[in-house]
Image (tube, rainbow, N blue to C red; front, side):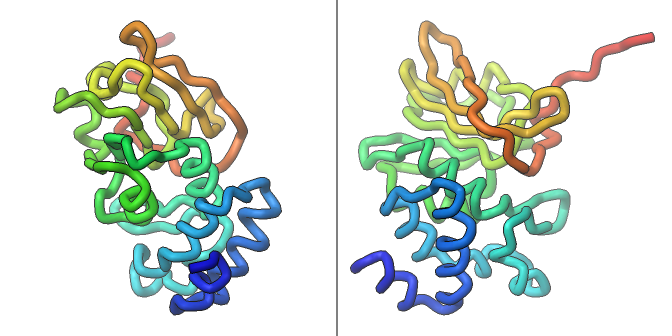
Length: 199
């Protein structure tokens, strides 16, 4: 099915088409597989009933309980940078029943999810792709330990109060992140840096 056919076949197709044409393509997200994935998943299915009309706006949508659905551009850029493969064993820090999980699941071999509140806890490893659905000040050691050597990371990163999209790889047991672009990404308070005492 072509990308245009996929868009037109879905409820809310006009809003998704507008999202793709006016938010993603104009900001450099042009990978056909990213556009096709985002055309096939109705964002309105992942927000509260009262927020459905705002599902395609170019900013984060409140989901309640301190959670947010990131703007379409954030998820488009994350997906493009993740470059998920059918051979990937992926770990998502975020809602396993949420929008980003729905985008990733058909593109990887397996997808597991962990709530941000549990991200610093030890768990099974060997993941080749780690995607954090939000911006983190720190990447917990226990979370980095779950990534295989040469595994990839795509995350939001908080640096001096500014959120950026960042990517990285694990090498010699350590994950190094490279900030790519300033972009508004909802901050995950569970992945905040420990508070330091000061005068």
